[in-house]
Image 1 (cartoon, rainbow, N blue to C red):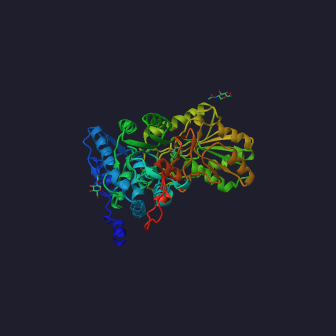
Image 2 (cartoon, helix red, strand yellow):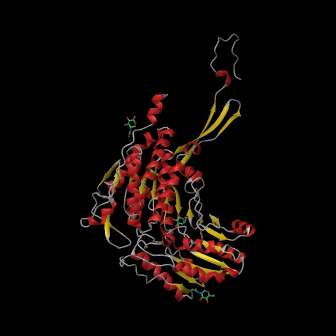
Image 3 (cartoon, rainbow, N blue to C red):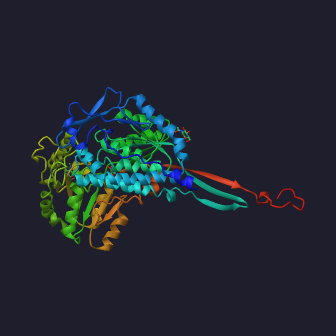
Length: 534
Ligand SMILES: *[C@@H]1O[C@H](CO)[C@@H](O)[C@H](O)[C@H]1NC(C)=O
Ligand SMILES: *[C@@H]1O[C@H](CO)[C@@H](O)[C@H](O)[C@H]1NC(C)=O
Ligand SMILES: *[C@H]1O[C@H](CO)[C@@H](O)[C@H](O)[C@H]1NC(C)=O
């Protein structure tokens, strides 16, 4: 027994971070240009330089300086990554669930120990404030912690004595090689929604991070290796469309998890499903906050402002649309005042409330949607388009912006803006507000602000949206539940993380066995003649 226990405690390697993204501490990173440091591929347990001739620049969104480059992995590199996952699968899936759990227990501690460093890297590449970046890592960490409860999540079912001497039981088994395609807005959280759940169940995993923000995942991969993950169980490739098509088409990949835009999500769902894969795709959103006149005004306005403008609105769960019901419409001037007070700055500057958008193209798109809103008749109560941030004049900054008197047929309402823009609509009654939310195609999240329990109950019951907050602006469930975006915000039928996540990454094997009682080993010589049949 002691030997068995000792075997579970694999030796931990010391944690040393760099070598993965660049060769020196993050704080010195910009000094590296030129020459640009390059992001490695992670194949078969090694951080390797791509042999590609095609590289994509990574910019710091606060300055637009090129800070690193990421390769478009070549077809043979992508093949090598899948082959490595495939080769590692048998041993990994046959490892006892307790050994896998041990690796993830060590992993969650290593993520905690390195949380601040990972966050700095996120701010550097993605632009969000350090506080937001820490939240990004933390919400992912919670999924890793929850993955450690695999021992009860992965249980099958049994039914004894279906008929005489016959029992039925199920095993919940891994699928094989699974893959994840992650977006730019949560460089740590979303990869951590994917590979830990899949891998603790015994799958091996191929990740493709966003080509804009690959650093956090490289860091997380290094820590995972340090936690004892065997070579080949996690592989990482980089790239754009070719890498996505490769994942959708490769016959050895059994399931795909995707988070990102609707256009990409619909495409991946369609192409992956056609190739017989399981696909779960979390996509765009238009999250409505309904403000009732009986709400706690102070809390509600603060929460609205935080949820609309936090992370510069680049959150799938940003509360981008407010519906002010009845008398609550009078709160608009105060809402504008609060939004004005937010400080826009580079994410690593003290006191920054919101940082830059990810790219100049993203900024241009957001500004265009604001302009279109004005043309279509919305009132621009706060305009963040011409903001200047001292010392960061080249950054992709847009300040908090509020468009009021918005009608459901306006473009700024119909499209996901993905920037720090709060779109405000009005409704006379709760029923009108519910109708409006249910008429919108997206079903990611919604919130109601009220002090009346009956109003909250009625709203939660009648609104057709997968995640509802009652006086909670961004209702992202903890990982013992699942992320249950619905309608146009989701494709697939099994959600991310929680019990649903384990179901997504496992398949059932059902065993029906008959062990006849009379065949039980007899312990003394039979003294009667055996009879034939039953
Ligand atoms: C699987 O494990 C066995 C036994 O430890 C080892 O000999 C073999 O090399 C492993 N295979 C792979 C592909 O890692
Ligand atoms: C929205 O609908 C109103 C009323 O039907 C109409 O006057 C307006 O032109 C429409 N706006 C847009 C942008 O379609
Ligand atoms: C809403 O949430 C996801 C995940 O955060 C986000 O990426 C996407 O844009 C939106 N749709 C969802 C959540 O289904």
